[in-house]
Amino acid sequence: MENILDRFLRRETHPAVQFIKYALAGVVATAVDVSVFYLAAILILPALSPGDPVARLLGLHPAELAEGVRSTHYVWDKVLAFLFSNMTAYLCNVKWVFTPGRHNRAMEFVYFCALSASSFAVGTVLGWLLIRSTGLASTYAYVVNCAASLAINYAGRKFLIFKS
Image (cartoon, rainbow, N blue to C red; front, side):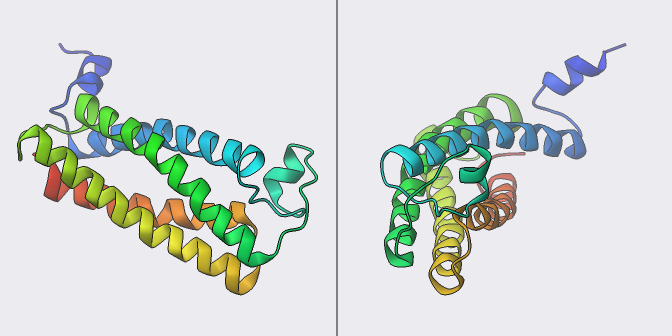
């Protein structure tokens, strides 16, 4: 009898297990995204407000920025994070979650990036709008971005890009 770990490590598995694997791969890619985003938002293009929950958690005291500047920095920090996390997501999805082969490898990667870029754009514009129009903390805008991206990416990857 095959053990549970062996079944979990295979690509061919029950859809519920596949979604759990997708979620775990997403956790890895999100960890990369969060790390790069906050490093950039702290060290490269400041995007945290004094009241931002992560700034408070880390004991940081960021300077007050105009919402227009902060929202623009937020977008560029997200772009940088996206480059790293998208490659991480692709590698995890191809090696562990989905079965490649619906398209040749080059087109699969192009479609994967196009879908990721689309969901990134939707989530990032939504975050940018929330910061710009309501003064929402960057961390909360980031959470809204993640929720939008999760839904769009899973459906597109499962039904349009990979075999299963």
